[in-house]
Amino acid sequence: MDKIKQLERESKRKNTIWMICIFALLIIWAIIVLFPFYWMILSSIKSYAAYNSEYIPKFFTLNPTLENYVLAFTSVPLAKYFLNTIIFTVITTLIMVVVVILSAFAFSRLEFKGKNLVFTIFLSLMMIPNELVIITNFVTITNAGLRNSFAGLILPSITSIFYIYLLKENFEQIPDELYKAAKVDGTSDFKYLWKVMIPICKPTIVTVLILKVIECWNSYVWPRLITDDENYYLLSNGIQTIRESGFGRENIPAMMAAVVVISVPLIILFLIFHKKIMEGVSRGGTKG
Image (cartoon, rainbow, N blue to C red; front, side, top):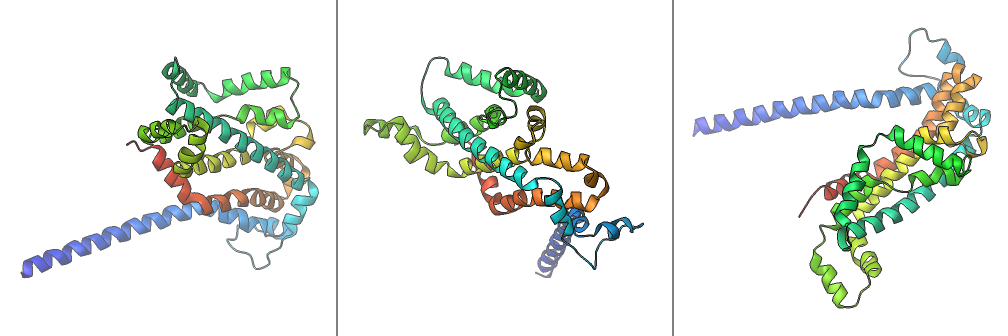
């Protein structure tokens, strides 16, 4: 009996030590990951003079200031870039979600000749490097006269093969019996999609929405290629403009303030919906 108790105590001690080690590693990793964000925020609330007077960087400040945020909005039209990015993100995301849902429904429930071949070709397109796709899109949009326009920004981003595949896998988890029963009752395909499939697969659709919003908000290469008119600049263009301008190269705190303003919406969005993102991805990757 004493030996059993001793073995139990040793087992608990080992488990405790193991958990302490795991938490210690997680804390160290969290510090490594979060430190750049902390340094970005800290630099943004330091005055220009205080930042440049630090021969040895300080990890705190006793005199925080918001003048860098004011400078970031007044030196360049950052508010306008915000508005353009919101318009681009909202319209692109809404159109893409409609396209993805209808495509995933067609591949998962409708029967038509060559369906598997078409879907295989779609998946094979994911193997093409993005650089080649960007070149093709650039030539197409330029020849169509859509440079420096929201249409030129939005059109190449209104579909995603990966999201179609993710949602198709999710739709296929819904039993075929529901679809057959709905057809017997005279329910149209669109009504079945709207009333049955979308509510059941809501977590995955929300995940697609959030990931697309993040993708659009962080879009950099395509907006830089297709726009050279400041009226259509997105935040990505704005960051580059700030960096290239005099105050962006010299006034690092003001540059950091602009980066903080741009990053905060996505951080808040992820913190609010991170559970739904994980739930949607796990549902999309589970069969049966």
